[in-house]
Image (cartoon, rainbow, N blue to C red; front, side, top):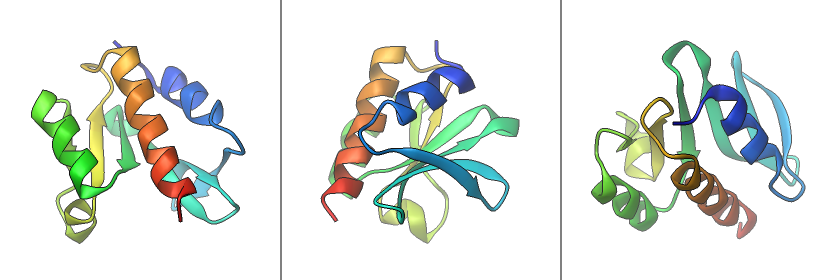
Length: 105
C-alpha cells in the first residue's frame, strides 16, 4: 500500500510537475497554474483532479479507495484516494491520469 512520500514522488515524476503550498496542503501542478493533485497528510489521502468519466472508472474499482470529494468539486471529478488502501500501481495510474487531464487544458 502507498504512503505520502510515494504519492509525492509519483506526482513529481510527471513531466514539468512542481510542488507548492496550496492552502496548507502540498499540491502539484503543471504549467504554473493547473493543479492535478493535492496531498492531505493529516488524513493520509490524496486528491486528484480527474474527468467525471475517469472518476467513475476508478470509483467502480473500489469505492472505499477512490471516491468523489464531497462538494461541487467532487461533481467535477475531484477524487480522494485512501493511500493506506491503494496499490502503488493504481495510485500511479490515477496520478498520471490526473496529470494528463490537467495537461490537456
